[in-house]
Image (cartoon, rainbow, N blue to C red; front, top):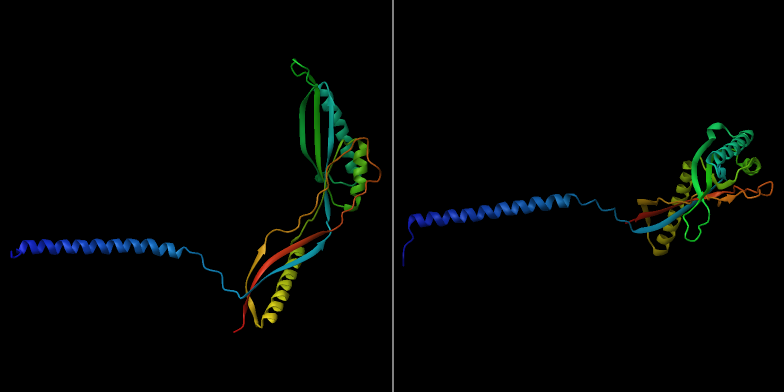
Length: 254
């Protein structure tokens, strides 16, 4: 049997050290890649033994209204259509001011000039028959009781477009807080019932989540003032019901 030389032994030892060093480096790289991935995991939600939904609702009457109204006219010369619209809009604006609406609560929301074509004829190009000029306003009504009377006045003044009456709320935060408190009480009532029925001792609240959606105020459909409406216009603001839904997790006693 051949005896390894000193040079061969040194070469084999160096190769072994190189293999061990490569293995250590590879393990370090894998460790560095795994640790940050584990550190980025979001903390888990505390464990709860009883989980229930709670709902709270509060009736809230609206405290102001939003009205869309305006004038649309047609004429062959564009100047005539524009002048007719301007005259009627001046009368509508005056009626609003006479009804107690402040100038800051009257805002132009839309103005347009559109060509109008005659019904198409066979084998003929479309023929321009005139222009349609539209001027629309967004009106804030602070006194809800006057909405019906204001509609009467703008229609009498010559408004051709009336609609989109919305009953709104200037501040919902207090009402929503009341609904939230009621929702927590409803959730605790349910949790106590379940815990009692299951022979458990209900503990503290571990976590609460809220459904961000709640009931929105309604909106009336658009009305077209063709030939006028019966006077007075019947308008009822009614009430809106704000609802809050939550999910609550409770612990249980030892």
